[in-house]
Image (tube, rainbow, N blue to C red; front, side, top):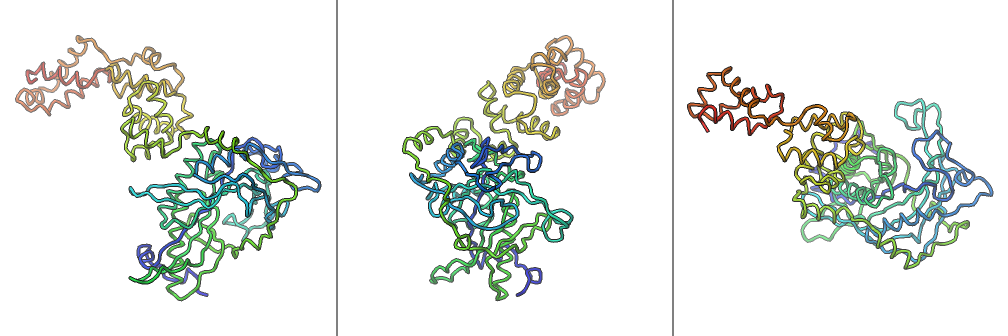
Length: 504
């Protein structure tokens, strides 16, 4: 068998010209419940290792699981938001396999009778909508976490020893499995992004990929594109790249797997069905273990749990309580506020979309709210190393600042100083304006004196303006603004200069 490293990888464009990628995604989402799936242990992230465990989540003899009702509610909400059918009766199963971070040597999951089936999620890439089918949404418990110590890569190979933290074992998970409907790395990334936003909107998980509360496995296979008149080829053998923990990693890993598999097929090799690991530094995947089939897990019904029988009333109550979902929200903001799709992407990427909407509700115009949160306040948050929502300034404060700017009481430069004052704890925007003396100077006498001084200090420029070169007035405006310490309106200053020079 030739190693991928020994093969010349084709360009991505060449690979997809000859082979059609067939991609399915499995996304694991940790639910934001206070306690674990089958016991009362806490789920807080970052606790001391093995501080949040009990006989149930450690699988000790004689311990019995009890289903977390909140987790069931959250899972049903996800299924409803994904347009799934919700089972009126379902049950849990034991999925048997051994890992050091599986304290029971089996995982309580769902197999042939999942909670949610037959859904879909639409995603948009470059103006084209792609519908991704959802095969199933099922509930299960998370595993613990292994830490491999002493090696260079953090993997077991080369490590001197391993440590296991069982705090994560038993945290409620849903696994969301798509149909093999995805055909490009870009759509794969967009799907995970849209799914993350949908789940965040539901309020059932923080979906922080960097902390592992959302993890994606990408199943990738290739099939040769048929010539004209030929039937469509069957799906190829798939690989599963595990635990991708960023949108960028999803796209890069899928892209690499496409070129790697194309190189193997070009060389007459066969694709091995296996799990693979993605290395962020190299951008390559490496072999993990041969991929099991469902029969290898020896599923059987979980004997310690009764089936779930959900009433129509229970599901209808959750359906009626669903919040506005991301696609509907985007459509509304475009219609009501005049934002473009690009505006919304920028605001969401900056983490300020909710804040902008709250600022508009507090009295700002949509363009002004977008401007201040996306630029000055996003920068302040980045400099402080915190999310924008944690800045010590409220949407109402920002709305008030935009009103002061619109009314001519503040310039943009002064408004930035007001923001600095609010963030420093000096009070409301009005209190900062008063305390720092930041209001625009409306005293015509003071402005006139500054204008006359600027003209006297630059007679050559003044003469050009008198001669009709109105654009030459810029340096004079700058001189007046400097003399006024920014506490003047630039448009007013320009008008006064042109009037004094007889050029208005």
